[in-house]
Length: 312
Image (spheres, rainbow, N blue to C red):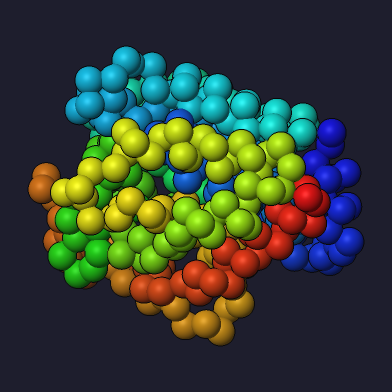
């Protein structure tokens, strides 16, 4: 099914002037919430989703003694999700398989080439990169083609809370790539860990609002439940045993909220230290840093679109 056919079930169409191009960059098989965010973007009609780039989570696989080739597992997970969602016209691209070796490293792959080509394409709609994992693909594209920096905005779901920062999962997957992002000229909207952690839901909420919504709703719920036993750690405060955090949905939320919310501030891009904490430097480029988002607005938008597109 073409995505446009699915979106027609919403019963409304936004004006063409609000169209934005989106590329989703995801470590989809890293944990169970990534698929929810991907589908939220796909069910939003003003988002012209140009493609979905798979990225690695090799550092996590090494830490947990898992098999390598995490990017390929992310790629296959995106394909499974699209199959369950009955969407067959959104391209999926293989990304980089490991973190950058140096700040100048510029590995080539399908995702990197796609990011460059889309950024350079003649299209009046602004381009946003929804970065929901390691920054490797985006940093490699910036290193290979620095001219694309002025032609896109990176929605960075990651980094520790301000002002001090702390080691955070997405940064840990490729700190060098995050430094490339912050040192480059590209526009950055950052959603730090303390903001994305607020996208908390109960498992009962997901069972009620997501699971009944067709094949894809059942798939979303079950793949998360299948992963919960291995992801739950009583020493890790993010999960209590009956909750989850749909943290990657923030990259949809920042484009859906109106511009008068005042949920962000402009500040110099931090210097990312070896400890993955922040140091301030006044001569750095300015980035947008979110300090809040309307969680209920964003999640109710997702639930409503899911129910309309995949009625029970």
